[in-house]
Amino acid sequence: MPLLPIRLSRCLASVTLGIALPIQAHAVAAPEPDLARMTPEQIKARATELHPAALYVLASRLMRREAYDEAVRWFYVGQLRYRFHLAVTPESERQNDAVLFSALSENVGRPINEYAFGDVDAAVRQIDAALAWDEREPNDFTDKTKHADAWREVRSGLVGLRDNMVANKAQIREQRAANGLPNR
Image 1 (cartoon, rainbow, N blue to C red):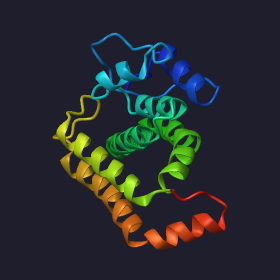
Image 2: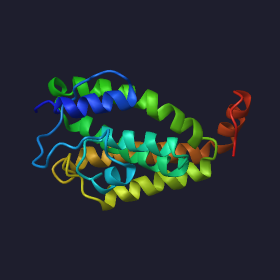
Image 3: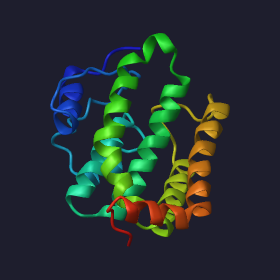
């Protein structure tokens, strides 16, 4: 698998971490997008073909726009697609992607989850919307048909999280209050 062009890796790093970190990706026929110049609307329009890290960038930008619920949905779409990509990428080729996934999960995912868990019902609606989008839309980056078992397994992990949130809604609210976090 070739490395992503340095422009994309620099863009991802500057948008999220402030460092340059090349990541592994599939070769694509289309010109490499410059995420630093793409609007959220442009990223959404190409979401089926972009590296899943781009969906974390989208979620982060939506948070900055205060489009919080939409950010939650796109974060979970990105997480689904990134976990799926990692699941089917040979271990010898996924190190850089795994590092970037971890960094994005911490730097983008943590504040989004902190917001999302403040209203479990709203978060569940966004997770359901993410699952529906992922099922409905093609994945031109990582083939869902070729890797159907891994795709279903990754999806079942998010379904499990959603179900756990519903089952433990009262405890989540109590823990947030104990930690000084708002419930909506």
